[in-house]
Length: 467
Image (cartoon, rainbow, N blue to C red; front, side, top):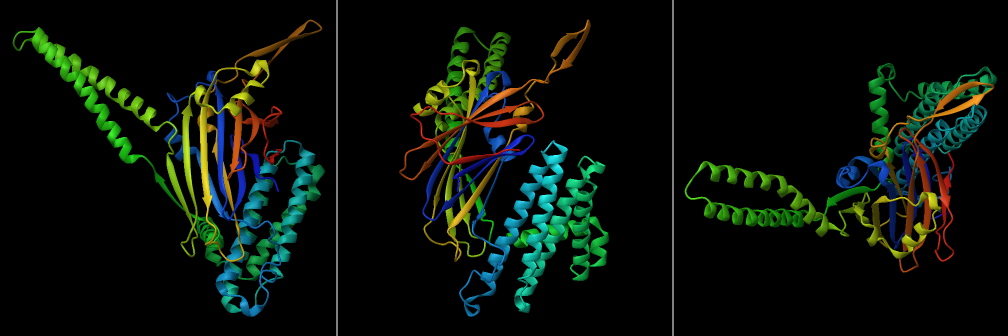
């Protein structure tokens, strides 16, 4: 399996995902090289605000070999099973099933070719139908277990129906693929009838969109229980920031006090000139106080982690992993030598000045405390580029051409290329590097491509999902 998976998530977001096993000590560095013509930098984009508003992560247990005969293959004998173990593996399957359907639907929505779209939709319908049938063949007979199964079954049935209907609602309608559309609608009708047959939802709930939506949201949270890890995020350097603020204020007041003493010596007595001079001094103090504090804080904070995160098992509350997170604009001279070497191999037309946004996450996974039968966690981090796009210019240029004496023109969009270099460090192994080119405009990511690296640089196992 590839160590890192990179894909376009939505029109203006990218996501990387990877798996970590017990005892792993992994560090990931992402260097975003933003051309200065984009107008993005520390003066326009606050790193802390960007982190909280545009970077979304999800960490959960992961099992590559989790198949649909869900419970039977997990334990050697019926006597060794417990309700807690059954619920954990049931939730893990239901959660991974729902996430997989979500991902497939997002990929479907980005297919522009109508024929390709409908064939992919038909394939998704077939897979969903088969998985639901196999899942239901393993319905437990024990009443203690059945309620958990029914919750997951109810949610997966409703969720798959909603996702397929959503795809059809926004699809290009054409009579050439009426048979595929009808097969998808038949599956949706069958799932609706299936839930009615099993009395999963009351008549009042089914008739009220708000009630059914809130109920399914609750069921989603129930199936995440024990699978999605609880996150405890803590900002670092709060005390140091207070100290920096105090020190900056003291330095500014020192200068102000010296100027006041000089002013009192220059003017005899309490005069209007002295009052005006003091007003100017205090005015400059207010102007420069924040600038001095911010400059000192940026210097002191440089290279330090900004947040710490503890990942806990939601059932046992045991600590599964600990993380440190960095996010900052950095200087060109602070780049690692290998990263600088990779940048030198760019095409000459792409060697433009850039602001460097550095994201780093260091994870140490515990050797123990995992739920029985699992040794892997999956981390998915989504980066929204919407805060970048709002600074970009709209395309205003036109291209003219002449055909048989007639002159016509077409409007063209303004495109920007963001270089992304990813560095992977696993324990004491040598760092591995990979470079991507992200071509984007104000409204969408055009493409993500992987670039060749110099022969002297190691490249990790990685994949890009073509959208």
